[in-house]
Length: 148
Ligand code: ZN
Image (tube, rainbow, N blue to C red):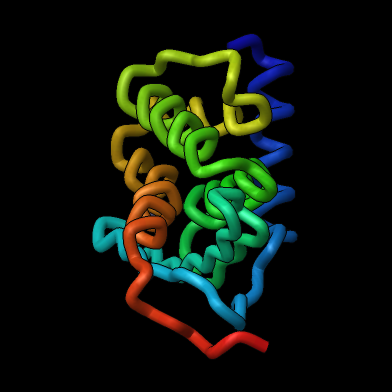
């Protein structure tokens, strides 16, 4: 990664940490999961609203380091409006990026998280939101509220 690109990536992470997108609790008929990264103390609650296999709404709450917050914010931005199949492809591509450094063209802005590969202790910070998302997908057992 060239120095100017690295600088841009850092700017995006700082921006998403300061102003996290979709940082709110979702109510209504939603799926949710809680994720915790004990290595760093990051905590995330992720909320999903799925209709006809499309992610209609997605949001999160929580507290953690800049990487975990920015990663969750970028995740909600990337996955909103996507199908579950598309979301799972993002999960695979992000996982490959964080574990092997392999960069898929599909990643788009999520590529900014690729820099953490050089810092193994931060990989779990970056992947927490994604594992929490996977858990929320499986979790249909928590009706937060009844239909409005
Ligand atoms: Zn962290």
